[in-house]
Image (cartoon, rainbow, N blue to C red; front, side, top):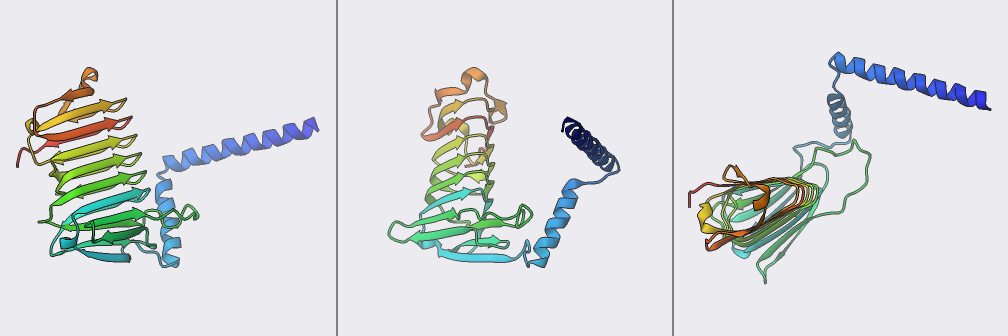
Length: 253
């Protein structure tokens, strides 16, 4: 029995070494595991009718009936762009309808949240799903809040009196932000925000663990990563665990 065990152990060791050697040799010859994964995924998604540019869902909401937007992304990716016209347009591209939405006309509140994940083989659908929310350029919200789990979130030229941004392990990128009250909470994800205002117009409340905080290109020292300061009439609150936060003021009110 012991001899059989030793033989099996030797065989496993030989195959392990041989496999590692093949991987190293393939990598040295320019073999790309990422490209191979993408190729297999493309073939499978192609055979099953899953294409990146397929529009799975399109919803429209009249901007006159929306003053508040609340979004829970979960593990999905979401982008906000500035659109034209009188409609807020929500589209999903890919193979599945990933989000559910609700417009409460009494509260003027639009809620969008991701559906529960469906367990599938790893090569199905990954990389083929994205959601885009188009908000008219001239629209100014009263409240905007987004909760990102492990998905990524980005926005351009977003304007809201009050803004709350929560990030777990996903990344958040905000370009051209306009708001009087900004609350940012970050776990292990990164937050990058450009604000159309001057930093002297804000009060700050900062609490950071192991992450870095950069204001206007200047990284805060460890002693300054927790506390309150500023005499402005507007407010920015930042609470960060191990993620990095980079906030720039564009000084163009």
